[in-house]
Image (cartoon, rainbow, N blue to C red; front, side, top):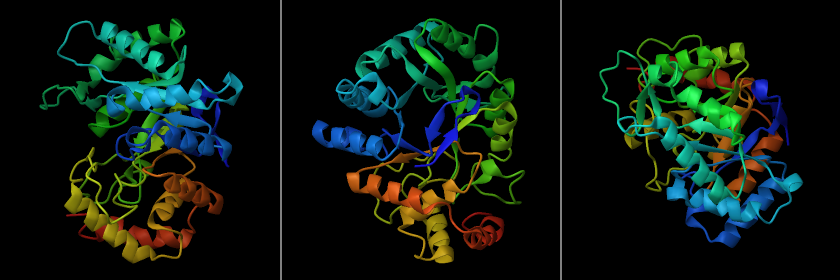
Length: 334
């Protein structure tokens, strides 16, 4: 297993992170003994990070992880990150956060987590999009007395080691938060259907969310990067729809993502592993990614991911085959 430095935290973490989320669903939909087997198998393979959230299965993911962690000594446990959302129209954001984190720690059976992520989508200051349960304006994150300050107090209280941000929402707002250097880690959307976070600029007509320059900003701020949605909610991994393809970017419904995935498969063929392995190997080729979160529904998917990591990144010829898609294919540009 390859390990990379996780930004200014200086943690050496595996290039694969075990994703405990709803889209993969293994920890939410499986019996505890199956989840235990998967978590142990991942750890034995060298995966030293598990990512979850209070919202995954309404706390079930954290509970399942906590039961497994309780069977391990501290020296035999992976790093753990979790997430919280705030309801921006309710008072006492700091109180909401403290309550959420304490509940997460209780479920995880831990005294602290290595990274705590703010999981609301980030909106620009001049956005006309009303705040809601998934969105919060950037100013409320980095202003004096805002969310970042409240998260610092959680760190001072010993409940978290490092502060993180899920980098979704309006890209300029996310970039502004990264530039503030208030966060040690960012979850960045990155996959073959939308690798824009690694570009200087997107091609004209780019028809989904444009995160151009985000990875460069993370590099400048020495921010750890956890890549998310490497399979584009499953579209790059399989043609079978599982009903959990929740879009988190623009123009990312099933029809649009299926068209992008079909174009990718036509360009790359089947000689680089399964579709899921090919998608994962694409991410491994980006040096700005500290780790890639992998969502799984079955232990077999974990085994595929570990095998893909062993093969390493895709050859440059694959990237050359994808560039014409990103620059001119109608599935990617309008």
